[in-house]
Image 1: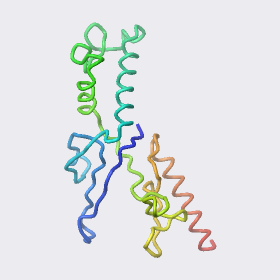
Image 2: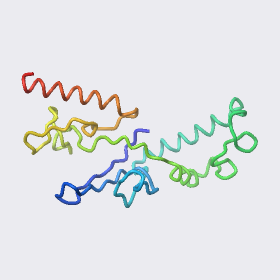
Image 3: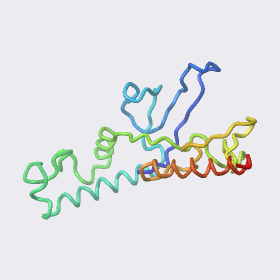
Image 4: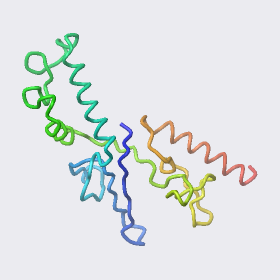
Length: 175
């Protein structure tokens, strides 16, 4: 799911060895030890559209798994869903469904968009020639310049950004 919830990265100090404080707004559970993140308040689904997408995905999955074609493929009681189970959470109990979604969501962490290529007045960090605003001689060529995160594996878009950035640098240097 390509979320619309926005993350936040802040600098702790001017020391190069001090890690930044990262709040990806991706989950209520604490993944800080697994991902080496400094996080105190994950807030999954801070954008209303993200919550709606999660609800729809849950309900669609429940309908699909309830179809007779899946009867021999499901492991729950009476060949129904195993978790959370229709006995435990009714289809019309939005609060219980959302609690289940929050408890079982796992971040994928394809980080992107932290130094977005946008006009400075729109919150951009990088211009259209991949120069970082206000820093002479520095370019940023990675997934962070993408204004929005892709809803696919990030490898392809990252290769494209790298290749295009390299082409720009070669052109600027007359290579």
